[in-house]
Length: 167
Image 1 (cartoon, rainbow, N blue to C red):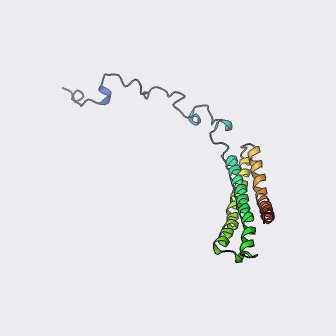
Image 2: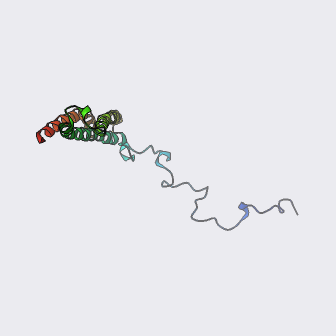
Image 3: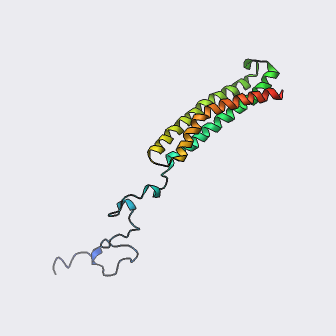
């Protein structure tokens, strides 16, 4: 006997066919098996075909709306409640109960959060415009974020007037 006939059987010595569902190493991969960026002659998909391509523009609009609504709601709450509270307890905010003073302080302090949301919204809108992610959403986001503090102040003044009229 020769040394070649005495070896243990290896995986290549079997005679039964391989699993027909599994591609062999000799078969080329089909186009569905290979991601688009790895296909020969195929570049990345077009910008319109990429999922999530408008993320910066979308987030800028969301953050700008959050900044606008947060500031408006906070100032409406303060404006509508401060006049009746001061009418009952005294004309100065320091004459009101401590819990109410902390509530007003918290509402005005939340303006910092809403301002930061607006600033981040503006930055993301500029990124979205520079990346070519459309024009409507980033421009609307910038307009809303810039107008948010002025609208919040207007709502505060209007709510103070409405609170005074209700007395």
